[in-house]
Length: 407
Image (cartoon, rainbow, N blue to C red):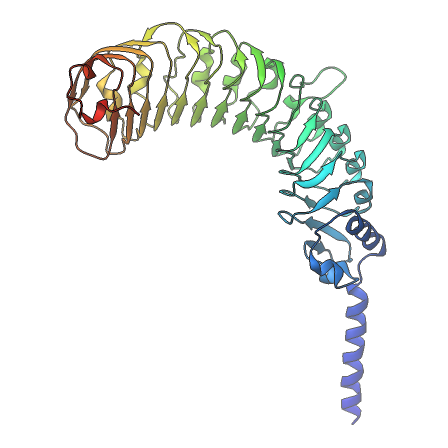
């Protein structure tokens, strides 16, 4: 009987201690209840218990019953994100992504979340300026604000985020220039650890600052497409040896592509389409990891196919539509071991198209519509599609010739 009583007492004591430890920090609990009152469509579990740490979906707490993660993506939340959230002083992760019903401005008090490492508000409907106070989040490594309605300029204070790995501001309505450091203010050039700069699909203007790039940066993705950037492409881009994807298409850039792009030995996508670039077609020889090239819709000088067309063995996709190319198309291009797509429509290639050699088994599409090709020699049988509509060779070809069918 004594042993039974001891066991019973132990179980009661354990249950009591566990109940105490499971009660959410009162301050954090008050903040979460305030957020619950501001938001619609919160998880049903938020209505079934008074203890967020123990029972609320999307809430993670530490051993001290303080909230460290608030992860509520794709729930259809509605409402605003006001200053109350700054009371979650132990918060490490805040993810409210893909909740388009979340609106209004961001509170500057978000900058008080000193332990925050992840801030993901992508795919919501937040508006107004990006608070400069976000630059106070010294531990932040992941800042994703894309696909909202933010306006105003990119805060130069983001340059203080020395631990930032991912910066995504794409798909907003941001204006102004790309901020770089000055004697009195930080800038994006200070983000040496960042691997992703996603600034595309905004209304950014001005030059691409030469100071933005340096040899000690670790950038992998630089996305500046679909803006209003002007001026020439700075040669300092070539200093970033880690770059794999460079997109500058859909701007109003002028000048020529810098020759130092040859230094980008890790690039696997280069897209400069739909600009107003002038000068010579860039020399990409030596870019031995390059796999995807799109230089369409620019104003390059008339030229024959450059030598790098058949020397970059990693090339999978070559797109230069509405381009400056003339003369003969080198047959070696179709023998590159990885080549999958060749899209060179609306150029001025002439003479004979020779595809009778050792054609890559990876080749799936060759689009040479609207050139001046006079004849064609084929010698391959695979699943590749050849499009030659709009060339003189099709004028004399039988109407049922496959490669002369309109596409």
